[in-house]
Length: 95
Image 1 (cartoon, rainbow, N blue to C red):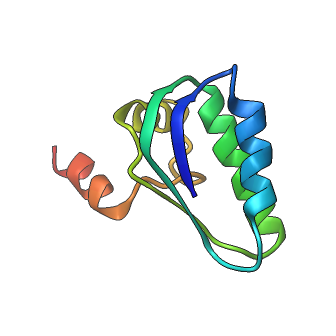
Image 2 (tube, helix red, strand yellow):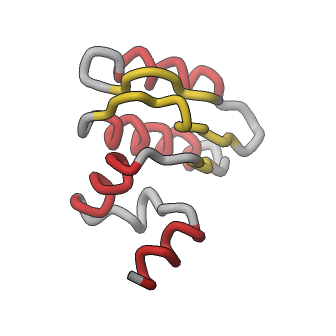
């Protein structure tokens, strides 16, 4: 699933519902490369998606996270819930 545009309080409810409707028995990859703007509501959306996939014993993978989302995840201390991609973790550890 490719998420495009702004993920803010104005769009997050629709995006959350759209994402959950796409979940099936397969692992799901969320591509955030085309996200143009985020606020803290993107974190709640991703957590909701994680709950939905875990409930169905599915895997959720998030790729191409914007820097602002990575910062929010680290700020909230939830990297164990929404892990940063492995290569990016290594970059942060090395700095």
